[in-house]
Amino acid sequence: MLGRSEQESGTHASLAVNAGGWVRADDALDAGTVEMLDLGSTGSTLSTTAGISGLRAVVHLGHPLQPAPGVEQALLAADSSLIVTAAVAITPTWCWVGRDGQASGPVVVDEPGLRDCRDALRTMGAAPRLVPGRTSTEERVDLAGPTGTLVVERDRIPAGWAELPGSEALSGGNDVWYGLVEALPAAPTVPAGTPVWLAFGPRDDHRGSLQQSLEILADHGVDLDHLRSMPSTSGQHVFFSAFTSPESGAFEALRSELAARGVRQRLLAVLSGVADAGAPGAIGPQWGRADA
Image (cartoon, rainbow, N blue to C red; front, side):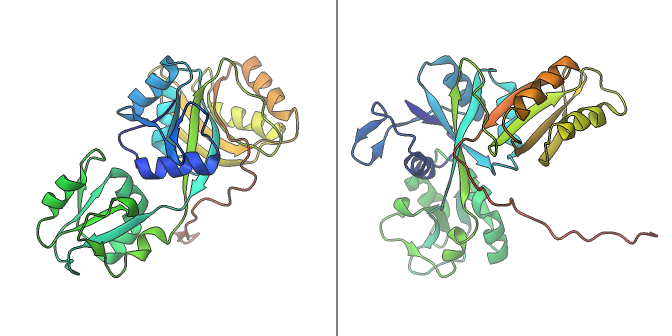
């Protein structure tokens, strides 16, 4: 069985399942159709996936080497058996549609649509009206009114509506990454060159504790692509990292040394089969003057 959260696009989750080859015999209803269960919120989706044998969940990742904050936090807060085992990029099918070329009203868009199209909508000067992902097409049409527009997947364009000039900008940007979450009895092996997400927390939260952990990572050949901290309910900070696994055996040695040093850790993702994820989105920093 396959599931997704109610906050995700069913169309794009299904595209990811097919592109990733994640369909098993018991998932397909018929040729080209995949059974996807709506499992509620992200937290509920992960909890249900951990509790039902054979259930796997499709989640939005952000990027294999720069995880979306929401997904890494949700994974660490969920059952420790859960791990992202695969990832795939798909080209989204978002389009901007209206009636008879009208585009003067609000732009009705759901949560995944706004997440993927935020920059394009801002460039277009649109005024988004956010709705939950479970909102039906008929309800969206009513909310748009006579002059409003919709951002929807191409297979959900309402009858009598057509794409508007500029619609191509919504799907002409970066691909969107999805991952497959499974409950495993033990951590999988990590081949060299595989993107991994590792959460860790030093035993003592004191000045220099992060530096000590980073030195261990560096000593084992880890070149970090992503590092983010967050307070923990236990008092110590939690650190989320993402990197490409170093040479064979080095990752296992790294985890052993972290454990020996009292650094709590959890493997959140082993994205096997992702040979080249490309670089995540970059910024052009404007540094202050050295003497400022």
